[in-house]
Length: 181
Image 1 (tube, one colour):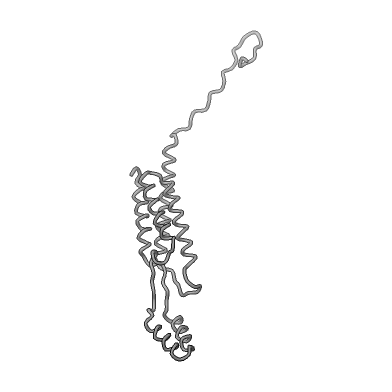
Image 2 (spheres, helix red, strand yellow):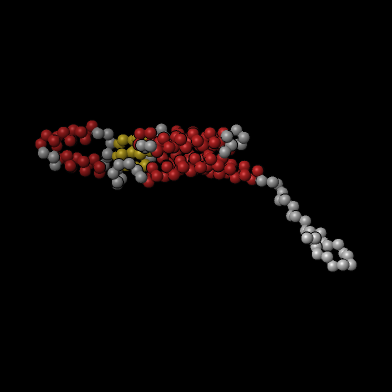
């Protein structure tokens, strides 16, 4: 680990992976949603209505899913970005870490905007998605700062001296062309 920023990127990558095990979405079957389903079950004929009401009675009020359960391929993308950012930080390639963090942040934003399930307020966003976004953003910022300081360290400390102007022509009695051709 050549830079003190590498452990911060590794921490961000670990938090990003841990966020996949945290709650991302919840489906709420309480209140108005349960009342609407009960009303629909009441309209079913005979035994079907009783069966539907029986299913509703065993249905939990809330179902919470983590990132591994809810995200189809995005979970693998986030894992790959976290691993890539961590390995790049260990190699001192903070620019690659920042790029991997940016890809992870983009994937998380897309997962936040495009929630699974039907529209409306049935599916709600949970804190795991926000944790993943914060971890990805931290990887981007720390990686960018590390790449910036690495670039600044590679530049020379002083600017090269300006080239000296050509010497003036020697003073002679005859007219000569300077510089000689």
